[in-house]
Figure 1 (cartoon, chains in turn purple, orange):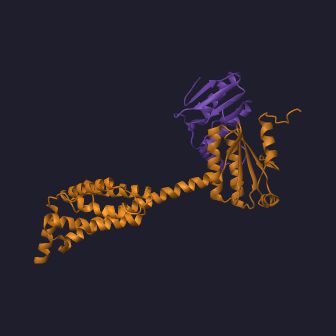
Figure 2: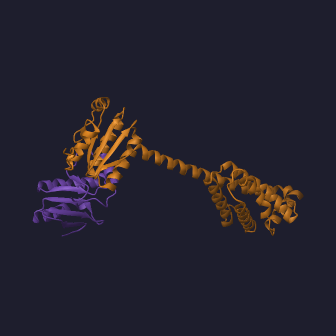
Length: 110
Length: 289
C-alpha cells in the first residue's frame, strides 16, 4: 500500500502495521491521514499499530500528529495502538502530556 | 649584556648538544621513588622509563623549536608523563610521589647533561628557566591525568551507588519490581525513571510494581515526577502499579491536588504483585495437599 512517507502492512485479520519512514512529512497531515484512513477502511481494519521504534523523541508537533491520526481512526472505529515507544520518547512525552492520550500503547504487536 | 649573551649561548649549546647515554644516571631517581618501599616498579621498568625519557628529551632539545609547546616532540613528552602517572596511580601510587619524581628528575637531568657535556648549565639562568618551564608543563600533565582518573573513579562510584539505590528486579517474566527506599528528591526520581524506562525496553516488561513503603516524605515536585514516571511507563505499553503508599504520603498527594486517575494503587507489595499477575493471566495458588 503505497503512501508517501509510510509503510502500511496488513499483519493479520483487521490489524495493520504503520511504520513511519524518514521521508514522512507530517506538515501535509490532512492528505496523509485521508490516504491512511481510506486504505484502512477499504481493508476493513479494526486496529492500527503505529511503530515508534525509530523515534527517539516525541515533541509536541509529532504528538499532535499522532493525536489527530488516533482521533480520526476512532471516528472510523479503528483502534490505534502505539508500539515500541523508546524510553527517551516516553520520557519526553510524559513531560508535556497532561491527560491520557487517545491512542493505546503496547510494548509490541501481541 | 655580556651575561645575557653568555646565557643565551648556553641555551643554544643545550639545544645543539649531542646527548650521550645519561639514562643510567637518571635511573637512580626512579629507583628512589618507585622501587623502595612502595614497589611500584621493578628495576627493569625503571631502566626502560629512564631510557625512554632520555630519547624523548633528546628529540625535544634537538627539534626545530625546543621552546614551543605545540610541537609533536613536546606533545610526545607530555603523553609520556601522562601515561606514566596514570600507570603509577593505577598501581596505587600517589600523585605526590609522581610530582616529586618529576621535580627531582629535572635537577638530575640538568646535572647529568652538565656532566655529559662539560658545560656548566647550572649557572645559566636561561637554561634553568627553560627546564623549569618545561617541567612545570609536565607536572601540569601529571595533575591533569590525576584529576581525570579521580573524576573517572567518582563517576564509577556514583554509577554504582545509583545502581544500588534503584534495585529494579524482574520478579517474574515480564514483571518488574522497584522498591523505593529513602528520600525521593527530583534528581533521584529522574535517575529512577531513566533506569526503569530503559529496563522496560530491555526486558519487555509488561507490568511494573513500584513500592513506596520505604518512602517517608514527598513534596509537590516529586509527586509530579512520580506521576510522570507512571505515565511514561504506561506510554511504553506497560502497566504501572504503585504500592505501599503511607498515610502521610497519601495525605500529601491529596493536599497537593495530584490527579491519580488512571494510576493503579494497591496497599502492599504483595497486593501489587497479585494485581500484576492477574493482569498477565498468571494465577499463583497453594499446592493441593
